[in-house]
Length: 322
Image (cartoon, rainbow, N blue to C red):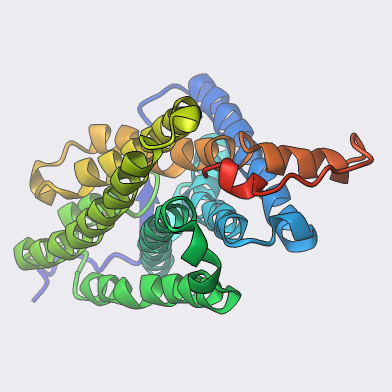
C-alpha cells in the first residue's frame, strides 16, 4: 500500500548532465549532434551500397550492412533524447515511453551481440575453411542468421519489459541519467528490487559473456590460421587489433554497467561509461568494419563517379580478411 502522502509517478525527468552549466550543455549538444550525424552518414551509405552493388552481395558485406543498420537504430534509441535534453532542456518522458526506450535499448544491444558472434564466425569459415565456405554460408543461411538475431534479441529481452512492469514508482521521479537504464530505475523504485536485479543481471551477463566467448573463440581460430600465412600476418594483425579494440569498448562497457548491484552503482560513472556504449562505439564501427575496407572504398568511389572502371581481382574478398 502507498503512503497517503505518496503519489504514483506518471512521468520521469531525465536529469542527463544537469550539473553542467547551460553553455557547456549546448556545446556538448553540438558535439554529440556531430557524432550522431557522422554515425548515421557513415552507416547509411554502407547499407545502400550493399543493397545495390553486386560486388558487395556476399555474406561478409551482408552482415556489415545489417550491423550498420543496427548501429543507426541503437544510437538513435538514446542519442536523440540526449540531444533534446542538452539543447532544449526538455527532460520529461512518460513511464511507458521510458519502458519502451529501455526495451529497445536492450533488445537492439542483444541483437548486436548476436551479430558480433556471427560476423567473426563467417570470417573464420572464409579464411580457415575456404573450400567449404560457399557451401556453408549460403544466401538462405545468411538471411536466416540475421532474422534469428532480430527475433532472438526482441524475444530474449521481452523479460525486461516484464521486470519493469513489476516496479512501482511513488517517490522522486528524477532519473540521474540521460536515458532509461536499469540502475537508475531500480534505485527510484519503491519495490523490493533485489530479486529483480539478480534476475536481470544474470540474464544480461549471460548474453554478454556467452557472445564474448564465442566471438573471441572465432578470432583465436582466425589468428592461428593466419599464423600459417606469413605474407598476410601484418595486415591480418592490424585488422584484428582494430576489431578487438572496438569489441573491448562494447563488451567492457556492458560488463562495467551491468555487473554491479544497482544500489552500489555510481550513476555519474554509469553515465560516462554509457556514452562509450551508446555514442562512441556506434561512431567508430563504420570506420573499423567498412570504411577501412578496400572493396567498400572502391565501390563507394565508383558510385560517386570517382572511378569509371573496376578491375576484377580473383579471391579479392578473401584477401581482405574481414
